[in-house]
Image 1: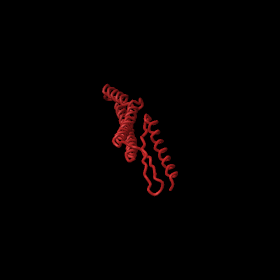
Image 2: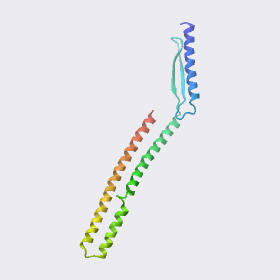
Image 3: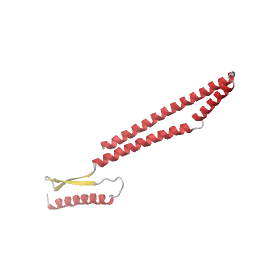
Image 4: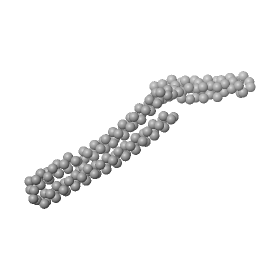
Length: 166
């Protein structure tokens, strides 16, 4: 092989190295950018300069810590969304337990005032039935929310594990 071919591949290699360095310098303050490194291998068969490989340089500890923190943040976001849903269920005026308790205790008070009244007793049973239905509805809604939050957490764990493998 002649000297021009060797020089040509040397210049190409230098251009790749310069491109990598300039890219690292221009993106040093970019959030999420990972520094790159170019390795050059010599070729004893052909023209002196062999293959050039550009790869990202990772700090494994920092990267794993970031993924763990990301996983924890997603866990607490999912947990918070579940708590917000439960809070909205409990504060809903149609499902308010305080209203149900007030109605139940008022019906008990009325039945105590008129102990022989069959209507007052039926009112107590009716209010108790309404309260039991509200408890069951809230319980089912909260169980559904627990399933939804656990599903979100599992999705985030899968996502975090994929990052950790990379």
